[in-house]
Length: 300
Image 1 (cartoon, rainbow, N blue to C red):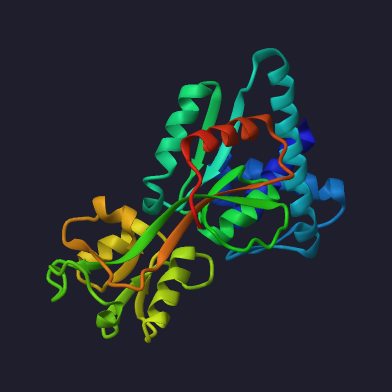
Image 2: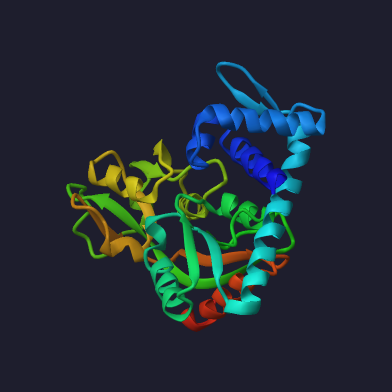
């Protein structure tokens, strides 16, 4: 099993691109982690990382090894699950990624139901996973499930199942001139500063925000991008700007901000769960059965 530990160390460093953070993640110290990477490089006869005092980067050999390392580690996890299932029923770990506040109505019902039905399944939850990263992670096996906005996946093996559809509305500071209106036209926010999730194509919420504003005839002036959805709401509450969010967040908006519905035409945020059809984990299958129980079909 020594080689497996080497691959686990390699994947941690490859994802963090920082030996200190990777060591913390693996619950070890930096010196033995560096020694493990050197042993793997010596065994392979090639350097996997270019490293200096300021940065760590994958070499071409490292880039070539990474998807294969993902596959080996996933196969080992599935083999352990299969062996345990023969004598103990469904047990093991499920790796679930989610964005954050926007999943507060979809993640808890699933995790509670899984705990009730399968108490021997361990839930490993990772937050701040945006749509693009979630789709990539289920494709390479670093996540079993990811809560995402419905989007095209670069990997044809990735399956997405719609679990909720929420109307988009405006989140405004309480002292905004339109904060007390029952509903507003989106065009009325054309002159406002906007707070947004990242605009690098990784967030479905950002794509919906941009598309909604463009349909209303303007491009939003984004003055701040934040990866944490709840921090977006907090910055609105602080008076930095306005934003658009799905209606499900209306019950968790921080003091200092309020949710205001938009006039027709309405726009919607789709919430989905994605997984890889190539992932034949018995634990994943059991959780997907729970998904079917918890989330009734949603019209897209």
